Image 1: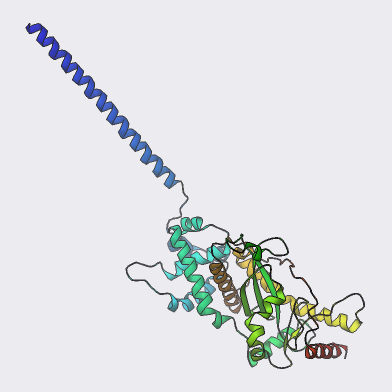
Image 2: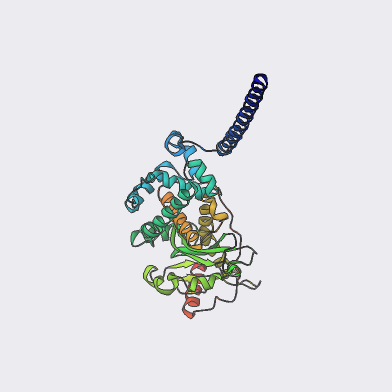
Length: 375
């Protein structure tokens, strides 16, 4: 009887031991599985290429040429921009904001590349949402507070300097600027897609601008959809509606191509059907020489800020802020003698309708210019 009892206890003990071993094995398996899962998650996270302290430690060590190559402008221009926008950058209570310099670097990298917000965040060690907020904030500050400081019509001696500058490019007297429109290529927006689909069969937003002889923008008008004719955009712009007579003196004028109406202060070329006189052909030649500056200005703008060659659109409002901000930064750079060799050629999307013979006084003034060139 005693032997039978000891045998039962032994079997029970063995069973309990096996059960404990099995439970221990199962627990170990679960723990290993959990560890493997955590390790996998960590490996996935570490596989994202982040650059630690890029703005704080790496950028300050860039040479002047490396800085310009990466951020599309010289360090001196960067410091000027920081000084101007610093007073407009509001700090929110309860959180530690990014340094102004870092926010501007983030925006410049965004405008100078086609990197996604996620890639931008990885480079600067921030979240994607923070990268997006930084770009919105800087673009809005520049477009709302700096545009009137750096994009404006010249007056008095400055106006005389512009006229003199154009006289070195064209024999036409009295030129104070050249106007044209540039299409910023975009992804199809969520609403009114057909309105943004232009004649070159891609979606775009129009930037109308007047440039001087140094390629500085004197006036900009941004946001009309790509299907709009240049003349329609022009006739809805503040320049046409209420400001031209205030900023362009009598007997001074800007140059525009045949897509624009002929006005006393906007000279266009003659339509050439093969029967133009030699005098009118010469006028067209001098007109073209003077008007080329605005095409070069657009080319430099997009060469410097390559985001404007193709913009992935979330909101048209953000796009508009970015275009205006790019034009402001373009002017700041040129004022600081900060030129760039990269150039983006502009596609010709204009449709030249019969718009020239619009104002009798414009025709008379153009004829006077033809006679002046013939003397």
